[in-house]
Image 1 (cartoon, helix red, strand yellow):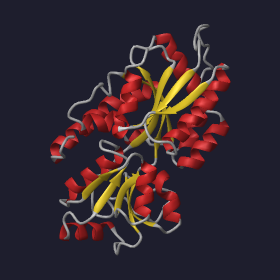
Image 2 (tube, rainbow, N blue to C red):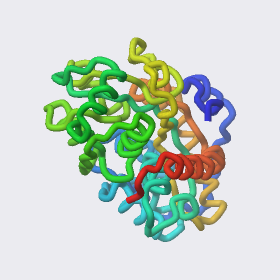
Image 3 (cartoon, one colour):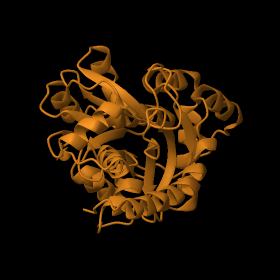
Length: 325
């Protein structure tokens, strides 16, 4: 995975220079396209979905709309797209939650996260950050571990739902540190972050994008970044490994998918068009402003990465003894 983590601007510039302009088949798209967001409105996923939809609409001259079908950690929306007609007119924009993490955390799913969805385009986003409510007398990751061990079950951590990346991060952290906290799942990251800032829950393992505003406002305190290197937006915040808790790195992404079985020429058009329109300087600037060090991945890269990633997380859950849902 480390080789995938390159600066967004350089890679996107390369894609912009080398990406061929797609020549869509005459009958695609033959009607409007629906992009399903499997989380509540207001998330970084919706932002990416709307940015992609706006650009595809301009490229195709057909309407492209984003719809929210949330529930069960994103698996409701993912299942809807997995079961949709494989003609390229129904797409999914999502994090890894209902894909790689769902494969690891759910005992049974109504769809196969790897086999039933075909990746189109995506970005690797900044890693998760461990944050605590600012009123909690904890200022380092070591202090969080010590407090949680001394007070098992007294701290609660929020997530955007069972099986999501936030849930996975919390379970992995507990397994690695031998701590016990209470998981409080919400219907989306925004309400979870709001309750964390208000002190209704104490801890969250969330995306930096979702937490940066509350961090800057002093409502929550960042303790560590859950990836292999620090983030330029929080240069003084150590990685979890630097803070004494190795083995809790979590790579997250936001990607666009079509149903598996989509005709090869339609999938090729989806991949080439999305890759081309999202590599413009304006879109690169928007993604960089929102996500910082966000790396672009095309459909072929994602198709190679996701099955390996899913197997890695399945094995990790089994080794760590994390209970399945």
